[in-house]
Length: 473
Ligand code: NAD
Image (cartoon, rainbow, N blue to C red; front, side, top):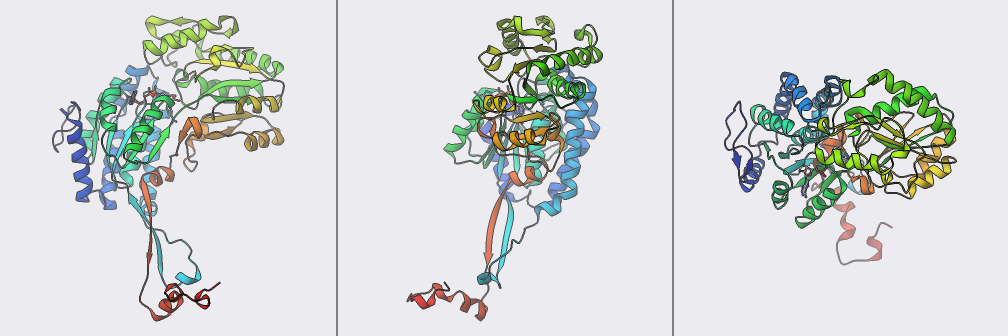
């Protein structure tokens, strides 16, 4: 038994647990009844969702603080306002995105109707991750609703306050047949994956991503896999190093480095490394004071397992630490830390760090940096800081990754017209803005012929008996 709705009434508290097969049946029946088909129904649900965000900002900020000690500014900027902006954009464009499109057509189909319908898939499963527990679950969910699907959402069990809040709020604000919440971890997700969903949208690590993908093949269910990886950051000597340091450190230390597109490591020459470390020291002191543990602006590590993992990374290469390095297990606190003169073979360079530790790997030049990147798995994001167009072009043309941001980090995520997603080990598919809507619809092609005699004549070459003269070429 897992958390889910038992009935269709509005409640003020968390709904009772129901078996997953019932959750699935309910979602399937609702879709088959066609209640999500009318655009006005979808619009109403999205408006309710918007009201849910507006009326529960305080509760969402509290839940994020409980789970991650997230400060209010980051909670609003990176989750709540982000969700609100995305929803407003979807509501504004919903009619335009949902309507069928008519592509260009050839001479033979001159008199026919050629149409692409945006068909909802049916029942969608959205599995969220803990690091941005609201945004990563609710944004794809709202896209799935906009596209006319019924949805089962599975929040991450590692952010329990957010998981509880989501379950309670969704049952209160949205149609209980159209959106259902299943709480739990691996066991519940395994059970969910046995069901025949029409689309699965997963955010999380690559290892579990492979489990999801494998389970989806059983039913030939299409997937989006939003995964992670080590996102490299190259800096050359042409840029303003203080501004560069500020941008990189902000992107690295928001949410204590637990961000899928956080710059994972830096590649630069030894000279740039020295300047960067000096600038970083100044910036970090300015932002977090003499004792960063006392700063209200630094999140904590999600749980003891991840804390120990990060502690082990620090302990493996203590001599590389040039800034920070302090930890406190009782507070799950890790000081913003920079490691210098790191080698590609060091422990810290093995897996995605997903914590507030920033290693710098010295390289001779941009070519060596590109080689270093290409010898590893394709990252989710790739960052280049340079005023040299040729250098930037070199990275654009000769590396592969989910997305790029030049002279900044993370900010490309906020451009709603840019699809966001990985490639290779960092993911399959993309979302954000219209791409989210398109993710959750099947583009159903339709050719509608008529019985006009000219049309029939134009296409009559297909009928036997075949003669060469029948062919138009
Ligand atoms: P995770 O892989 O541990 O868990 C993600 C989800 O999978 C959770 O809902 C969890 O309950 C479920 N799960 C865990 N084990 C499972 C199993 N054995 N079978 C089925 N389901 C299971 O990921 P995480 O630790 O929550 O997230 C961290 C990773 O996610 C990082 O690699 C990060 O880069 C990536 N991430 C990617 C994005 C993106 O948008 N691309 C965003 C955030 C995080």
